[in-house]
Image 1 (tube, rainbow, N blue to C red):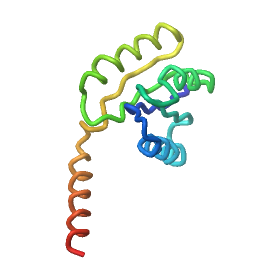
Image 2: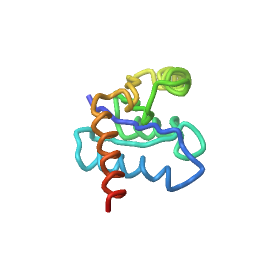
Image 3: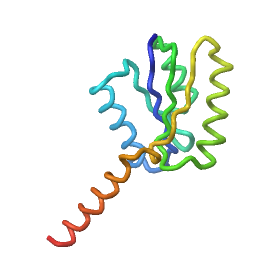
Length: 126
């Protein structure tokens, strides 16, 4: 089975904000273990979720993990991304689409937040 990882961020009108997801996707491609890593945006930027999913299928994915690059399971994750998953399941019946938990619920987020706080303290004390 070929599994693709499809990252989904909200999207922004500011290109610099969208670049973070592209850099994350590239780092994940370099590190593995997924042979297909694609990024997409819910709104305001390209590629869309549908076009990124099509790319995953065209590259041979039989399973696509939809990973929300969101800090919480708000309405976008619980409603909009679930609707996108359902739509993709209907469109590509032979491919399995799974909606993952958003990044913000991960226990390592505590360490990330503490690291950012320590960075700010160091800057303040310099």
